[in-house]
Length: 294
Image 1 (cartoon, rainbow, N blue to C red):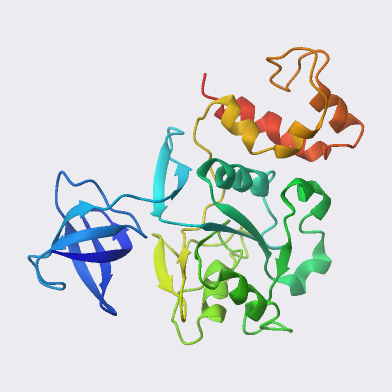
Image 2: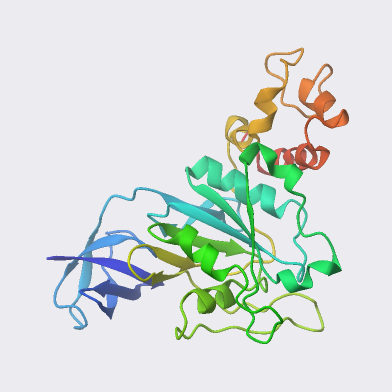
């Protein structure tokens, strides 16, 4: 019995890393489905047809997203940091960063914001830093497309922040996650694609989460791009954890205030007065109405 790392998982099989090499492997029925980042106990010689997973070792953390039924779906395990990648093109969907920050908070992951394609930033403001001041969220600007002026901007600095940690790259399709990975790991072939001129959206190029070891220590997981990151249904208390600035205002009139349309809501008053960014309160209202578990 040996311990290996799952670097990619799809269906009933996947790819595992052991002793510096990668091997195809099958998942045994009844052991559960391993995901990218899992440590597993493997029976049989790596690379042989008889090699199967006997047990998934305990996960320290996970990254999730919702399936079509708004149920949580694990796409990666043993992650420490969620790297939220946005870009001027395609522009971030409404409240995209807010949803990722909420997920990171609920799952116990450190958030990191990367504004890629910084050479296109003149086309509009990507993100207002004041909106996320409660997170002390720094925005790392990068240019990862080889043909772009200023190619390589911010890549070395981002690499230093990622070093020694297990991070997952998340974001909309087309924001350049795979290009970032190519820039961080020169010589590593990762499929990239141009934006669709017809739709203005990125085409899916990563179809399953994939683990890439960084030089020295740490790793980056490239996750599948999505048009819209879906949150699963969760209790109101979990949703409120994703909005830490709400805890800085005085108490609402009612102790069980949900910060929606209740009279005497201190959070709504703070948003109206600009003490809380109004778009943050709008994001909270939208998430509560679509994701609250009742």
